[in-house]
Amino acid sequence: MASRKKKSSGPNDPPKTMPEPDPQSEFWSFITARSTKSWFLCISLFAVFIRLAVALHPYSGANTPPMFGDYEAQRHWMEITINLPPEEWYRNSTVNDLGYWGLDYPPLTAYQSYFHGIFLRLFDPASVALSDSRGYESYIGKLLMRWTVLMSDLMIFFPAVLYFVTVYYSGKPNGKKSNKAWHTMMILLNPCLILIDHGHFQYNCISLGLTTAAAAAILSNRDLVGSILFCLALNHKQMSAYYAPAFFAYLFGKCLRRQHPIVEVLKLGLVVLGTFALVWCPYLNSVDAFLEVLSRLAPFERGIYEDYVANFWCTTSVAVKWKRLFTTQSLKLLSLVATVSTCLPSMIQLVWSPTKRGFLHGLLNCSFSFYLFSFQVHEKSILLPLLPASFLAVEEPFVFRWFMYYALLSMFPLLRRDNLVVPYAALYGLFVLLYHAPGVRKDAGVSDSIPSILKFFASACSLVIHIVYITVTPPEKYPFLFEAVIMSLCFSQFVLILIYINLKQWAPSKISSEADTKKKRL
Image (tube, rainbow, N blue to C red; front, top):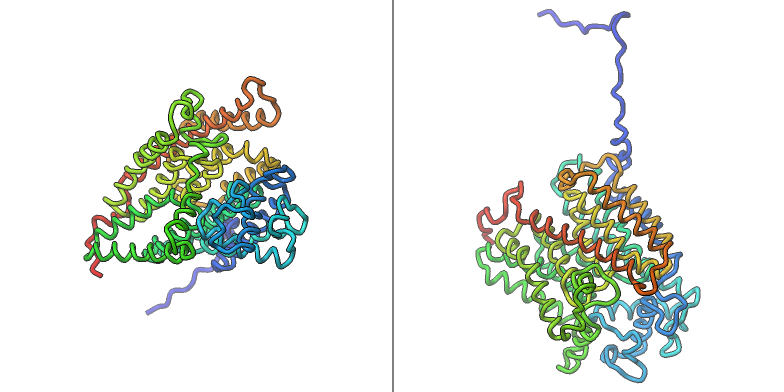
């Protein structure tokens, strides 16, 4: 058999052209060419740098006696916890005046304050001296306080994000590597979280990190581990209860589809009770001690809202004077009914069809319902629904972007009072640049169905409000006019997002529902 000869190229043949490199692929080449650990380390280092840059700016209550602000509250809790026994942390006394930033978070926050207090006392004992350190603002003290937030971020939030994205993208093709890195950046470089924790000064990274890890554990079918982590989040900040309906409904729905549902529910119940008992151990020796702590976690006497927050009660108070027309008891009942009613559709869907996709939508729907309708909500509470929105950043990119813009706007008055306009503008711009990074395959979602003119108009309104709020003095008769406008605009957008995500949760998924599969035989 005659062998075929390879055809040689002649002098008149056209020259071979190499395919032009795709600039979008080259943008993410540093990811596809390296392991997950390597690119996560690169993103983490950049995220740490941004946090350090924000930490150079002022914090809440800087040089504003007599109460100062959230920075002083956190420092004071360290002072109390390292100088008094646990049974006195929540008790009013001559050395622990609860009227001066008394502890009003669950015991895990108190334990965190205790360990951070030890760290401060090691390098700057005067910063946590009992009774003598009120309003303490030395350079070394402020530096140490900033480091405690950064270390909390690195030890809890960063590993939790890595855990989540690893679980979320497990089993997906390698072509999704660019999405995975982009998604990581969207969660780690959340401008709202960075501005509040490293600018304003709080430790939301701990409770949100525990919630992120809990969600990842649930998505990887480690329900007991997820339950423990979420209980820890609840015991760090009671606002984590915003997520509780979604966790409960999803896990309950899964239990009902197993061979022994009662046994599964009992297992989860025992894990939850055991975790709470361990955290609350110092306060379970008497009913009085337990109630003493519990009463500090529900400050109903402050009223249904404080300051200007973009939720239902504060927005509608322009027309309906809730605090004048209703008693606190009536408002508690009204807010409870409104919150449960708006959470209920999402919970029913999760029990009826407990899918992982539905679980993430449920986290956003339930936390948003709490933010919009529950009792005593703060501007900073927008961080809670913003977290599950970032989980859905690839699936619902427009909703995530739009939500982020108006979440930032809703916190702008607070951040301006803290003199954080410069880092606010810088992080806003950084978010826009990173969001539009090339090479990421994001789902179109709802964006294509909204006319461009409407999106442009809403963006223009936001820009104008920012400029007016900074440059124009409101009339004396209406000193909070601009805050009311910001609040109303943000509330309208939040309601639209809540309606859309509820509809999306109930929409049929492309992936077959867990409810349609056979019961697991365990």
